Length: 219
Image (cartoon, rainbow, N blue to C red):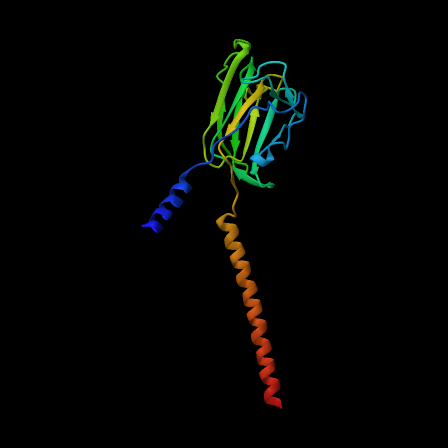
């Protein structure tokens, strides 16, 4: 009975999910450059438009700090192994809050480990400057397995126009990441390589044995 209870507890513990990660950036100083500070929680932060910095001028969904991605134009979130930031990881849920939305074309685009787009969500702001600006906070959510990289369009670029200074980013929430494991194809290649190596070693041993027997017979 005790053994059965132990097994049941182990099975149940495997079903318990780690709590989501919530980042509000309140512990960071104003104008600090944000990049690898959250690597130990599974997240790298960057932007194609310049540095990502802490902004406290307005539009925070909680507290006072938000993120300014390259002049309020965009931010890229990349999920990594918390124990090794050079090892990629994935998640299946993300939400962020945009502030100071004045124009359409903002949103989130998710990519998998191979760089394929797997999901996208757009802001509800449909008409330029018809949205309430500083007073509007919109939370965008993606829920799909295998998300490795999230591109946050905060400058209206998803409408087809060039990115412009627009929205802040705050309250990033995501499910605990899962580090990448070798794909079956990679494991098959490894197995094939080991098989070839084993054949080479065996062939050399058989050849050496034949040479040894030949020498013994000639004596």
